[in-house]
Image (cartoon, rainbow, N blue to C red; front, side):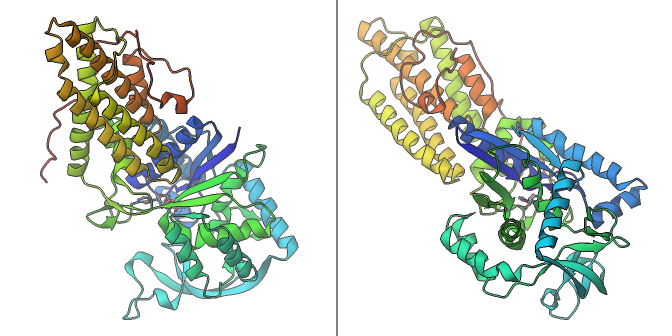
Length: 511
Ligand code: MSP
């Protein structure tokens, strides 16, 4: 069984989870569920990034220890996962000993090899962003952008990780592994970035300025700083799980691709002689009225509000249908309602209602055997074949929004087929040819609904399960086989009704 390891970024514990964090988990979950259905042995990791200045400051403000602060916020991040139907196998916290131990080991080995050295750091420092700034970060008028908060000039001794000596290796690696980063154009951006000489990476902070971190194993006066700690979570979480590393895929937002994931991380692994992951998937941002949703801009949406109102499956459907992985997407409640009402309540919800209703009315709630297929049946079946053959490659290429678009064209076509056959009319006829056509229609409706439900499984696991259940179907074959048109429902007993997406939804409240 092939191994497939997938991770999300680990979230900073300096704010509550918002829609952007939820999206990343859902996207990663869709990939994880898909790979499981395709027969891989999947390991799915998510977690929280808990060290650093901001956490130390926030805890101080609240008058509690940083560990307590991190415990509270990490628990909040963890608690949203089941509500979003996230099927993660593990949740790592950077304050856990299993993680800190690996960070210390990797630091020590790089120090021993001469890849880490003590140097002098001088520069403008932004406490809010926990980073040293460069001249090019200034506004045109010489001031520092608002986002950096208070900026002060400091000089201090610090440890540096040699990036420069590995720069040519990285360029060569990316040239040889063209599909390392998705979308492809992002890999080109990394190569552009690598045209300029890299500065070595400052990886430490003196203890007197930052206590809340992992002490360097070779100098207790310092703690390691931000990326060196955070990136290693992907490895520390599975180092004792044979066969998991390096079958790894990292799902992250585009803001943390260059340089952390595309430059620091491969070089850290290469220098430490650890095999590299398989690839990185960099998604875009959820924005609101064009600006990135984030805690600091104050436009963060609580994902659980939508889940409570519409259910986890509808929420997941919206995120995946709406976002082209890699590009940004603007969130609006109106757009959510449009998708909910038209795709889910109308197209899918109606199909379920009609299928159950007709089978109950005209076939004693039992799916009959189909007679010979006429033109409409052949057309629908041909459309399914086309959809099925496109669906898997679209999933493999992370084009989930298009896969869903195609699937909903099929779902709409089932409804159009039902209109054409009008089983409510056939049911009233006593002609034996009409009765035969009715049986064919009921069987075709049910089978196509079953197929749509099966295809939805990675994205809407709850809905998919309910569709099987009301159709009296217990899958006993592989997912690929479930996606094949057949006579799997012949003779099965269906439920009376199922309301999955209640309508009508109230219009968006006017502000
Ligand atoms: N702690 C670092 C990641 C370390 S990974 C080794 C971090 N944390 S974060 O909380 O700021 O962001 C976590 C993830 O959420 C990132 O991948 C980030 O891109 C993503 N998102 C945060 N806001 C987002 C949107 N508005 N939209 C989509 N995803 C965004 O960065």
